[in-house]
Amino acid sequence: MRLQGDSFMKLTGIALGMVLAASMAMTARAQEKPAAKPLKAVRFGKLWDGKGKLWTNAIVVIEGDKIRSVTTDASAIPAGAEVIDLSRFTGLPGLIDVHTHMTMYTDETPGESMLKQITNNPPATEVFLARKGAMRTLEAGVTTVRDLGADQYMDIAMRDLINRGEMTGPRMFVVGYGLYITNTAYKPGINPPAGGIADGVPEVLRAVRQQIAAGVDLIKMYASTGTDDDVTQFETYSYDEIKAAVDAAHQFGKKIAIHSYGPDGARDAVRAGTDSLEHATDMDDATIQEMAKRGTFYVPTIDHNRYYLDNWQKIGYANGFQEKTKAFIERNLETARKAHKAGVRFAMGSDAIYTMFGENTRELGWFVKAGMTPEQALQTATGNAASLLGKEKELGAVAAGYFADLVAVEGDPLADINVAINNVRWVMKAGAVVVDKTKAQPH
Ligand SMILES: [Zn+2]
Image 1 (cartoon, rainbow, N blue to C red):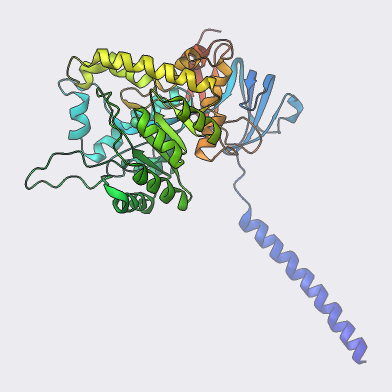
Image 2 (cartoon, rainbow, N blue to C red):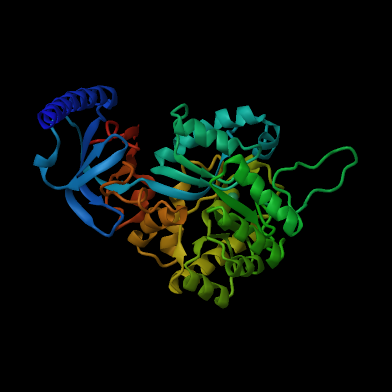
């Protein structure tokens, strides 16, 4: 009886449990049922996938914001997928520009130089205007940027607005204030901007921690003079200060980008363990060797000085700087040539500022001049740049699991890098088409 009773109770219990489990599962299904992620399939005549493969008649299957698969098999296109036919074009991964100043956008407002606009515009105005530069950046095929310096955390605001879908623009990884030494004259009654000013190791530590607390993605430090129409190369920080910044950033899992126009700041930044070195010109052979050994990324930003020469009157530079800047460009290119030969890893950074947005990828032309093949140049704006961001499993390639960031260009970018620079016809970022100039083109 007892046994029977127990068995009966057990059976009833199991049955009840099954009913409960089934109803719970149904409830869970009803509650969890995700809005079906939109399916898309993009066809390319050719596709350079950023992983060393050139596909013919590739189909990229996209689910939501990610790539589900890359295939040549049309039967793999899921039922109900929106098919986008770009067979006339060559597909590339969305490009990455690792050195921008998105919030330092200006237009050509009559009567006001760009330098003045930057200082006169309130932050809200700057961020609102910056949407134009963001759009031009996307039109150049750049779907991700590493933004290296802004005032008043406008970069964080812009990054978050873009991530929330309130602003259309490239995905941003930002630094807040770059760290720099005291460089303003004393004026009674006027406090210097707090920002990134830091002198000595304790202040460097405070400034790094301040940026991290603000919510930045990485740290930027200016370890030499040189910016705009000034191409001087004096080291500004000591090795100990640089090392303190590098270690403090790394301690919190953040990378660091160090600006140095000259060889001394470059040498100390590299031996302190910087993740990337920006601009560095006239580097000595030992520093170049050390970069190759450590895998330090070199971001030479050769083209931004070309932009300054082309636009100096609108920017508001004083006449007379041009010869020095021209000479600097030549030496910058020569340093890049040496570094490439020595096996240093490069990442593409434009240093886009003012109205330079949209010209982000012209840097690739300089890389080819420095001895790269077009494919090696493209690698600097895809896989290499993604590695520098620590996002090599999500960005910089067209492969399953990566963000659906795609660019269609007209022509063969592996034969002529200018195709990637000038012939962008269509851009997708995270599964959404953000640029479409395919209709305007003759068939
Ligand atoms: Zn810069």
